[in-house]
Length: 40
Image: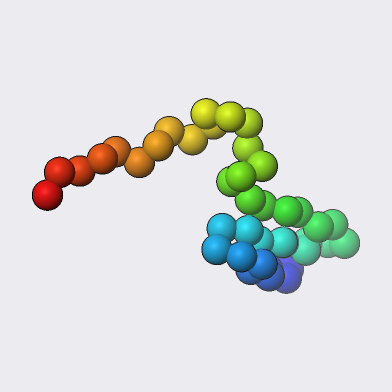
């Protein structure tokens, strides 16, 4: 297994001759809820 971080949240994983690109920006719209806001 080889893991390579490309940018802040982008990684490429190589495993058994296959490559996986992992990046939350590639997800469908609204797949992840926004962070809650906080008042100080």
